[in-house]
Image (tube, rainbow, N blue to C red; front, side, top):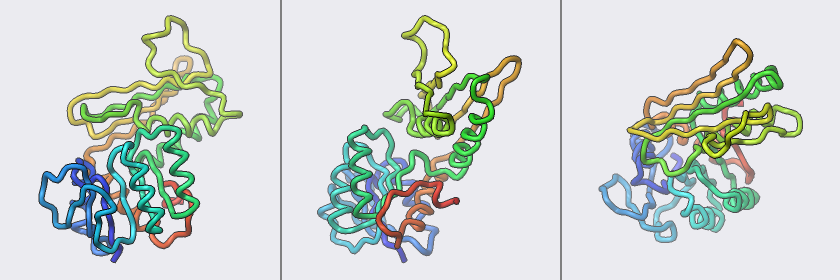
Length: 251
């Protein structure tokens, strides 16, 4: 049995992970961490990781970027693998994650979905074939409580496209309200929509002369991300220190 510490256990994604683990006989949440203790759980909940008394094998982080340094320090001090599913990290925070991966196994993913990881691969392959004659635009939609924009997944899609092209030559343009000029071929347009309870929708558009190709992924509920995080935890457990991605699970 793999014993999990769930950081951000009282958030919407934390609740989804809790539900998913109830039906998993290989992983068990033994403790949670959250800044608010607002609901009873089947496991004890603490306001900070250093208060945790239970024996833990791995951490799943579905919290907030401002909690990153604390949970990373705890992971490295206790030599615990950590799955980081939180998005919206700054460049300095991403550097902290890379540094931590030298001491413990770290899996970072902007999106825990198998479908999204397939979409990243398809986008990369399409970009290689269509580069130079098709314009590229990304549209992402999420619920009205999401704090970061664009989404980490939208940026991951853009990065996948860019990595497939010579010299990472594309520049990212966020919306277009501040620029009164024609788009150029070296742009990837990224647009964010926030509203209602949209779990997550990402579309990449390749627009050429007289034809258009769309690759689209729609999340029906948050539970699929929870299941992905659990798969990531099972994969990461027992691994050597290093920086891992969701693509490593499916490769």
